[in-house]
Image (cartoon, rainbow, N blue to C red; front, top):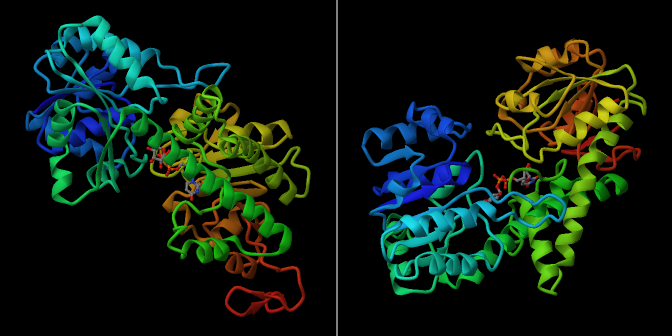
Length: 454
Ligand code: UDX
């Protein structure tokens, strides 16, 4: 089998490398000559655990290559995957499909007859049909086939997600398209991965529905966390108690500062637009989008309130600026709302992130970037945890206290144990874990009372 992967962004690069690991010959194509040159030099443009090794191994085995020459790349391919960007269109929130349609035209002009053209980018319902039309118009005699195969990988665990997915969704309505995709995913049949064949529209909608559902789950627990704070309950236990119900499931019930990243914000918004346009609005998702947007800026208010209501002239040490750990991706990160809001309120910000500082420097101004966590805490009046990188979980609490001006901690990812933090004398707050600590005699965690803590 031979395939071309058009677009070497997150999805394209990871999928291309993983397909080559499955034994398929893969040519990755990008218009960005600089990026291709760097990839050919073994430089990976994103931080993704394991990707560099995977690319190097398959490149040297001769199964993976990179080029800007789309025409040469698509020739002789069984399938060509479109994995180009589909950014939110300025103004209306619709997914911008210019790159997808341009790619379809170019592929149609150059591909061999009967090549299967697969959309891997997250594309709104109806895009596959449009691509089919473009292929037909551009190369009416080639009998090019269209398929939809959305990708569900997460940044930071992308390779594992691709190689051992919960399921694969394939929208393919012709025998040829089904046969080619079945052959490409053969290694996953061997590990009994459910592979669902369906229509183009159903496949496209499944991806949006899954992302919107997960975004809703997060937003739901975030609101429950706020309610926990208001009534003195512990969202950690609520989430556990809910999640142990197999119908609900434990995953994606971690309360935090609001979801970010390259997918959830863009895809939820695009789904609401598609639904409105189809005359069948998704009002729950519309609300999720709104609640999540507000939440990110509300996090700055939470920090300010915990620091006494006025941060003018104060310094905040911020750990983690990426939208989640194990990535250098800053897209729609809560830090993009929190940092400017703190600065607007007169605070100085010192920050550290293990991988995201380079990207962040272009997006956040007037931040003092620090090489390690304790350096960020020097002279700071509070510590804020904004992304749950593993290396922040085991920081030395005594050293934190010694380094900060005041032992004030705002933990927006719930990585510390509140009881321990209070016992250690921290002025500590987190998300949704008040659990009645203000009530006299109230049990806090494992049998400890507020009085025990002094
Ligand atoms: C997501 C989907 O998980 C993936 O299937 C899709 O292909 C792309 O979008 P990704 O954006 O890489 O993947 O990250 P994910 O781990 O899903 O986290 C998304 C956001 O939700 C992050 O900001 C994260 O911090 C937040 N989140 C996630 C929570 O706040 N709580 C949770 O319980 C889970």
